[in-house]
Length: 372
Image (tube, rainbow, N blue to C red):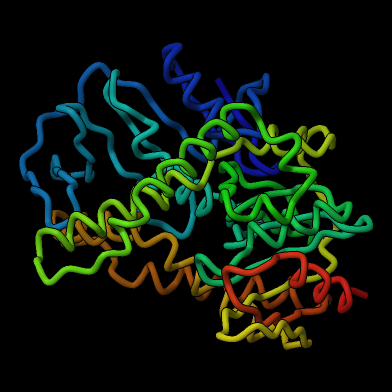
């Protein structure tokens, strides 16, 4: 089984079993399997067993067990393991896993960041952003985590924009944007502002959010009650986190596009503008032009932070394998900043200062007023 991401990175899963193929198809949506062979940028190779580890690293406040065989770092889940691709400025990359290893467990922390590294071999970069196509031009919406990127993209879709990507967007060498394979997180509270999506949200997502709304209402009195008892406060915080997670439904990119009757997400839209969200107190929403260097720097640094779980694995690898280069994280961030600065030089960079959470339609309108 093979996939091609954004017309650039090729991922291969030789000898994958049916369960692994299903996981790959789900996690790599909206990209489906392709025919062909040849070299792959990232190979996920199934093994009967991996060599016995010689150095086990038990959880270090992260609930993670890793190990080394003297050559590679590996992650251990349920007694089975997979290797972690070496951090490098150039591919190809290899991940070997024991049959039965739950690949879904490490897609977010290992597979997707490795795909992002492999993009560089094709002079492309994964931007921590959502992406839409508005009036035939691509609009990338970046910002810190939990700043409203998804909600603003959905508000633009209510106004006729076409979906490209959520959380991460691929900017290619030709300054076009394409989807990065990751699900879309739709919060329950935002649906009041999105009538088109509210009417056509996939059934499973709608049911999940309805249950979450009921749970939020039932637990509201207990979550509002403060306590000086440490155990009670820990329990209250845990319930808060559980409710917050439940109130965000995961929707596949292809399902979201169909919900808006758009067919498949857009691939290859020419980049027309970059928006950077800055979360501020107060109700005012403002939009102003900024410079490419500032935008590239913020995007590269937020992307590096979002990959922290991946980089943490390589810090563990450096403990087990002291010869590994400790400067690669910064080199990757600097390389992406340079590439982004070149891509952003020819398009407007718009800073939007807005509160969050808030009505995303106001932010969408401020963006449209600044688009060329």
